[in-house]
Image (cartoon, rainbow, N blue to C red; front, side, top):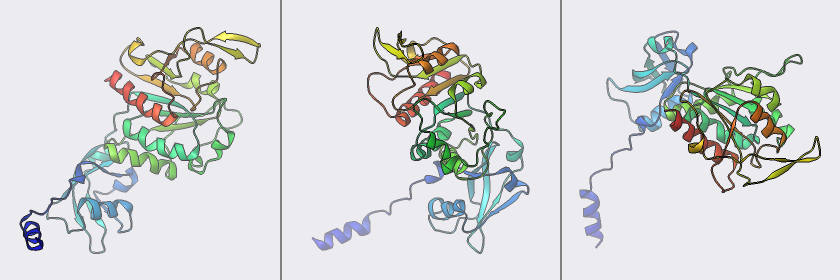
Length: 304
């Protein structure tokens, strides 16, 4: 029996390595491609990925190429070689740095989640494709979330400013998370990000898109919420499925609140005044990151 198993193992063809090459793209910053040849240091995480995952810890064949790109620039293939010290030398076409990456057609307004959940969400959004990302405070947002270390590189609002505009994220932990998602999808367009403590201040700055959507649980017919300002019960409009919301093709803005939804009725009134339609994914109670992922994918499908 043992001899038979050994014979089978001998005759079995070796399993070919899984072609991970086509799942990722190696991205460079613009300042790294000032010269046509870019050399990544041996300890650079991209060098490690190339050596251990793409080249399977074997020397590359002569004329080996890699899928590369420049963040917010172009993408393409370039020749690559292993340096004597374990680094990776790339011959990057200068045209990749001169190009401008097409921007996604979707902006997202997201009630700032807890730091750990934010770290999970950011790569997903960059992978799916978001043009401008507004991280905003809502009535149910913990104030401590704004002090998260991952947000420290974003510009802060000055005293005389109501809000800040979405900007290119500088190098740091936040940008690394966005790059992680971009590498997975192969799209070099990183989201521009703004941090705003107030939903009321952010909505007037949001692009006047043809399709404006605010995610909120469907409360059923004749649901009313207590208005703390007046002490009266206010009717809450029913959220609809995305397929039932009319709207032109082109661009869209999607607003997703905390796990418990936007504040009723105050924040829903803000969305109504700004021309947003309430949308829902049904009766299931979903976490913010789950609903966000599903809705972003569905809106992209709607826009395509």
